[in-house]
Image 1 (cartoon, rainbow, N blue to C red):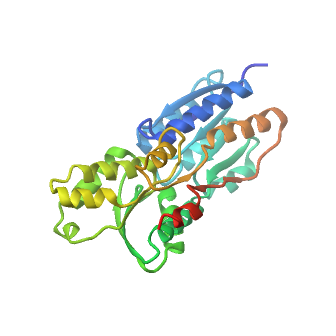
Image 2: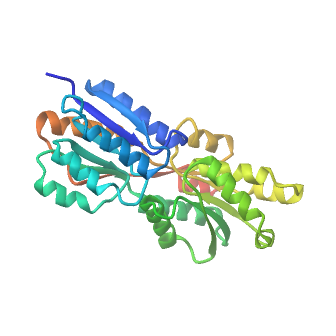
Image 3: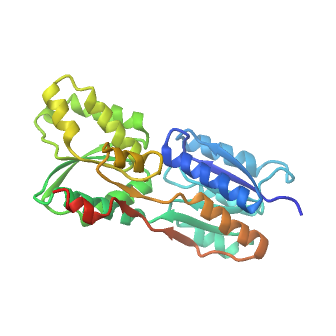
Length: 301
């Protein structure tokens, strides 16, 4: 029997969680004995669509048996998904709740499903972390992901749902990378209003942007303002062992939310589906958790 071929399409190679996704995919590929090709879309939806469509339209002998992808844009490529399924290629979406999966599953002879973190709960956990660190309330600088990204939207919704009323958010937009957070925070610092805003907490929707925010504050010309901004707690999301969790241990971050990489789980489910016709549920969720636990955060105060 020929080896199963799986194409994994990730958003960028400039993000610690995406690199963890790639590593998890490679480990699962070795474990299950499949061929795994990983592509990076450079945070561009058109690039991602072009890369995947090229694989779908390749000669049948060169096509992958399945495509696992984490969408860059807001649409999650429904036309490309249909083209893949029509070509007999299984389709798995990572970290996104997409409406077209139900329709595809009804007519498809191949596996179609999604595997993702519970991003609403990620936002709720960050809100509880804020409450633990600011029991008397205050102002948090909130660095979000892209406006059109459903992951960012769900994390924001969870934050707003669980956030105490005495904590005010000042929201900025990033692109999931450290550099994007440096740019957006540096631009905010140039505004007159930012100088009048006392920040008690910095909350970013991933660890890379939390560190980027720190670096932007480190570049402030005023030593007094710089020290004040650097002494507040910083919160992130992803909790990759070598970055986010290490930053918590070193004190660069006060806390993170661990979201397990899900490419490996997706590939294992795919192999079960392709080799044993065990089709997973339409939507499989992994559970996030606070690092450190909320009880330990509360004891800081």
